[in-house]
Length: 69
Image 1 (tube, rainbow, N blue to C red):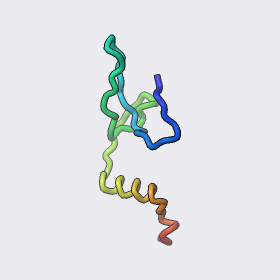
Image 2: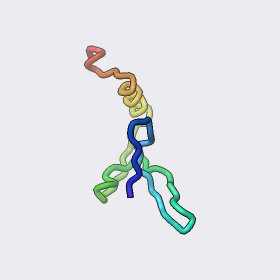
Image 3: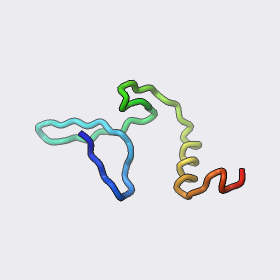
C-alpha cells in the first residue's frame, strides 16, 4: 500500500507501517538506509551538517554554478 500526497510540502521519507484491528499505525521513517525499495537495504553514514547545508542550498536555489565556483 502506498499513501501519496501531491501539491504540498510533505515528508518524503519511507516509513514502516502496520495494519491491525485498531487500524493503521505509521511508524518512524527509515534513516541512514538506502536500497529499501529494492529489498537490499544497506546502512549509509551521512555527515548531517553537510547534508543539511546541501538541502538548504537546494531549497534556496543556490548551486555551485550560481556562485561561480
